[in-house]
Image 1 (cartoon, helix red, strand yellow):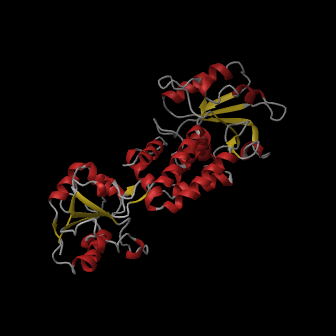
Image 2 (cartoon, one colour):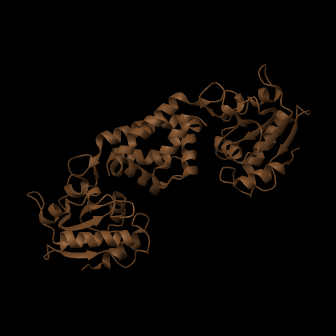
Image 3 (cartoon, chains in turn orange, purple):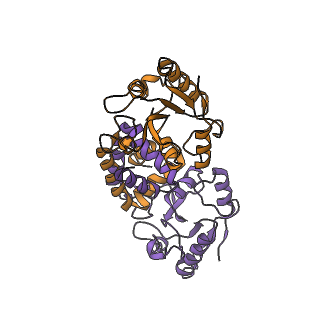
Length: 203
Length: 203
C-alpha cells in the first residue's frame, strides 16, 4: 500500500481501543469508501482543538475558563471526587452518582510504564483541598479510582501526600460494586451508584 | 459537555467499528489526554486525502494512475477477483490467495438500505470483462463476496447483468471455508486460502 495510507493507519492504530485491523478499516473508510466524511471530521477536530481546553480548576474538558461542573453554583463544592479520566467523570455524571466537584488526574501512577505524579494533574490537589479565594476548602474526598493495583497505588500516594497532612478532610474510596480489574468508563449506572453509596473510609 | 466536543464525538461514532463509548474515548484522548497526537493525525489524513484516489481500473486505493496490483505486469490479467471492499482485497493479498487482478465494488447490493448498483463501482465491470487497449479481456471471474444474503444477491446481479451475456467467461464463487454470516476482512489467511481453492462454479 502507499506510504501516505500507511502513515494514516499507523497513527490511527495508536488511538485507544483501535488495533491494526480497525485502524485499517477506518483509514479506508475515510480515504476511499466515504471521502465525503473526511473534511467535516477534520474541521470538527481542528475546531474543537482550537476551542477546547482543560478546566483550570478540575482538569475536565471545557470551552470556557471553568468547566460546566465547576461553574455550576448548585454543585456541593465541599465534596471532591477524584477520577483518573474525563471518561470516568462522564460515566459518574450519566449515573448522577456525585453532586460535588471533580478532580481529573488524567491517568494514574504506573511505575511499570514510568508514570509518576509529575506526569499527572496531581500537584494542584493541594490547592483543591485548601480552597482558593474562589472555591471553599474541601471537607470530603471520594477517591473514585480503578479497582486494581495502579488505582490502589494512586490512592496510597494521595493519602500520604495530601490527606495525611489534612486530618480534618474526610476521605473515602469508591467501594462495593465495581468488578475487580476494571475501570469506571464501561460500568453501568446502577453499579456506579451502588459503588458510590458503598464507599468505605480510606486510611 | 461542549458543543464542539459533541460534534466531534458524533462524527467519530459514524466511523466503522466505533460506537458511542469508543468514539467518546477517542475524542477525549485527542482533545484533552494526548492533544499532541492530534496535529500529526490531521496532517496525515489531510495529506493522504490529497494524494490518494481510487485506481481508475479496479477501484483499489492508489497514489498514481493505476494501483500497485493493476500496474504489476506479473499479475495474471486474465483472472479477475470481485470484492466488496479494499479491506477484503488487502485480506486476500495478505493471504497470497489470488494472483490476478481485482475489482472493488465499494459495497454490495442492499435493497433494505437502498444501495442499488448505481451506488457501487458496478457499471465498469463490463469494460473490465471485455478488456481495453491496455488490458486483455478476462477469461475467469472469482466472485469473492460475503457469505450472506446481500453477498448472494450481488452475485446474482453480476451473473445476470455481466456474466450471462459472456458465456466464454468462466465464473466461480469463493466457497468452502468462509464461516456463514461473516465478511472477508477478519478471516484468517488459512481460511481465505482454503476458500479460494475450494471455489465452486457459479451458475
